[in-house]
Length: 329
Ligand code: CA
Image (cartoon, rainbow, N blue to C red):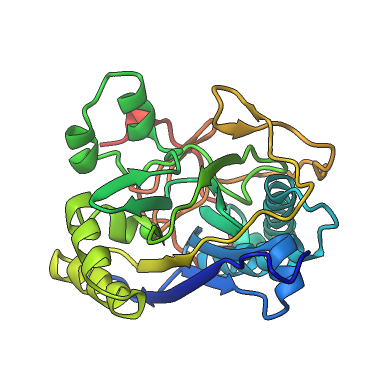
């Protein structure tokens, strides 16, 4: 790296809150901004938010493993390809959670969403599994970068529900992909070019479901990140705070230059996803695979995880039995 290469400069704040209805906070978050300028130039800064499920204890553990594993493994990856390293780190987290769940019956079915972003040079790479979100804010524009892996989002993409209907739909808590419940997981990675003054917001559905895009944009534009996270959480609580609320706000003060010779990811699958790499961890299948219970509630059929079904006791020592969605009241 030339000493004259422009360095990416960021202002960051994060905040998590239990909300007004729940007793425990199963969300987790973390960020890493390497102090070493060479590491910052080659690997970039990492931000991650996870929303655990499986009931208290399981959900907290799953989201914590996700946050810890991804933020550690990403920097241990030899590859300077951000998307590939991020993908591998998230797959490692998936395998770790899946293994922990297999070791302890009380944690059977634990899982977590995950939205992670690496900012390096003039690029952001956003990876997600589940319905925690990443937004890019530029001027007065708000763009949701991540695509929710949720039942309502699939209905919207298929043209069967409007965004507005999805927001209030009874099944809006149903997610179709998460970390920890299967031995392998598909991860979507979205590359985005960064401009000076851009803001990136990572959050759980306890925020995105309660604060509109317009409100989010107004708050993040008006305040510095340290104040923005506070106001975002406050707004979600004012709107009822039914769920745990987590937000990371990153402001791009100055974009950097990409390290020389970096390979940009080759987009596949409609230009949004990064393809398979050779690092998939194969775990043995686990008997009695159960469904995650995000926010203490769950329901499952096939690969769909219903987070608004009958209550599952986190202390139960028997795995909850699958119930067909059709039987749901
Ligand atoms: Ca949540």
